Image (cartoon, rainbow, N blue to C red; front, side, top):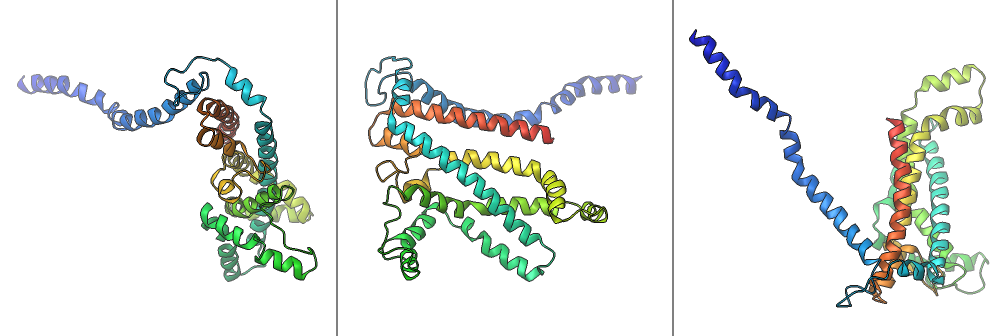
Length: 307
């Protein structure tokens, strides 16, 4: 009798503990999640609210102006130039990152190369990704100045008659900046695609070879379809990262000369911290955020389909 009574009492007091076990994991991560949400959404909310007032921060009593800041931004020729430059910069970078990364990944994955050669190529081709933006900017400024290696080699080859200030030339600066960013970013594609190539079963290629498929057919009907999820994912990420690129652009050209390399990121920085028009800068930042959110939605949808 005593044993049955004791057993019922133990079950009575253990039941809430069992129910609490399901809550413990959420309780452990809740503080961190709340902190992350606050750090993420509070600044975004502040920037969005600033965009609807007159020049906040430097004004004691900012006045509600509605969409006036957005109207001013969209009618600004410099902002229009920054959008054009950003689109050109992003599209060319993504295309060339993909092409170079795919080519180098296929080369490293080729069976004709030995392990030593593959290891050497991996190290050499990964070098640009090991440098931060400051090192890359200093390196290329030294190479591209009027007395640098690039001007010297082009002069020796007879391509140019006199030294060119590549980063100060309005007609060349954007293309030079784009080239430098392509050089700095292709290793991410190369490594990602190489990992995907190594995950493709050799049986698929052997079966295609037995059926008489040539190298081009194997590439377009086996390699590309197998790599498609990876290619779409890294392309979307690259679109977002390149759109947000600031440090390398600022260190190399700061948006000059004469707005020739002005990007949306440098435009926002100059508007806020050089012109002190924080409300106008907030409106521009909200437009950039909207573009990045659209890209992020496509990325998440692609990831969801893969799962």
